[in-house]
Image (cartoon, rainbow, N blue to C red; front, side, top):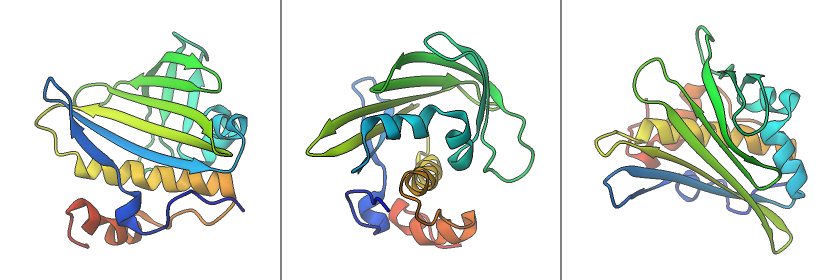
Length: 176
C-alpha cells in the first residue's frame, strides 16, 4: 500500500489559499506518492479508475475534447455538466474546465512531476475574489483523499458528514 508524503492530520493536508495579483483566490493542494508518474496519471484519466474516486467523463479526450463530467460520489441526482479539456500533456499536465449550474465555470489545473523517487501532484483552482473557498476546499480535500485510496489501496474517506466533522475545523468550519 502506498501512502502520501504528508501525514493524515487534516491541518497538514488542507488546501492553501493565496491571492493572485488580480484579487482572485488560488486554492492549491499538493500530494505525492511513491507510484510511477504514469500510474498517477492513469488514476486521473483512465475511465474505470476515475469513476472509483470522483466520477465519469463521457466525451472526446485530448486537448479541446468536450463532453460531460458527472461527479458520481455526490449525494442526490448526478446530472453532470459540460466539460472541456483545455490542456492535456500526458503524463505531466491536465487542465479541465466545466460549466456549473450556478456560477462561473470551474477550471482545475493538475500538474505532475517526479522528484526524489516520488510522483508529485499540484491541484489548483482559481475562485473569484469574494468567494468563500472553505467549502470547496473541503470538497476537494475529500476527493483527493479518495484519489489517494485509489492509488494506495487504503481506505477511502467515509461519508461526507464524518469527513466534514473531522476536517471542517481546519478550514474554519465547526464540526456538524
